[in-house]
Length: 317
Ligand SMILES: [Zn+2]
Image (cartoon, rainbow, N blue to C red):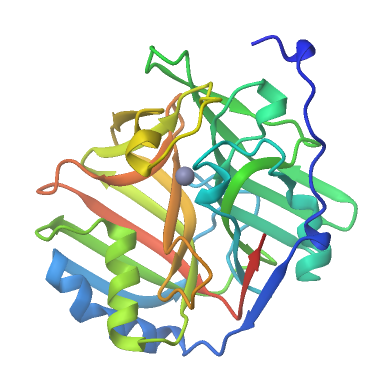
């Protein structure tokens, strides 16, 4: 698409949008580990949950901008599906630099799943957000995944330049100071139930903690077994879409081979804010990535997740 022929809106200032802040009083990680084991065992054959020192996430296969997931933790849910259905709201363009003021964190490290910055490419894309802001220094480790065309499912990857920190439509982000420290390590192998890894954790948390919100953010490593993802077609329709089923027609569904890494968030309970309870975007050292749906080889699948628990939940717009 010729981006010069289009006029695009400038990014909204998130500080001026409706913000709901919910202070959380999370239980210790070891209590969360114990609490979710029964739920995980209903869905997976081999399961463990324990508290460990976070591996260095700047190293392969993670390659993130910061070592850890600790310090001033927040889970954020920005925008929602009503920015897509019944029609695409192109004005829903945001910039993660606003999160510095919203969280008050410095350094601020952001990881998670969101819509790519539409104006930058003049096309829709899946975005693996990873930005570190420390003082005036910015490190942008964000990945974008797109398909060649609406008819061609071949996937390609782009990295964003340091000053391109925008995203579109909706986001589920985890922020912290990016410091090393203790995290929750969850390993699940051989799926026997119907739930994907992140939904299984969300439901296991809900089963134990009820209406208390537990919000996790972090990384998932898939070392074994293939995984189904979607990548939005480059040109979402200008015509209205009536349902999620119609929206599915505008997604390419593809299968990815391991190893895969994902970043995103898990929330146990929606107190009526129209939240996404789990959302992960996957990346690889190859050209493919996308929005995580499920594993397609349950007998061989192996997930390893490293998560921290959030002290605050923030809903924006
Ligand atoms: Zn997504």
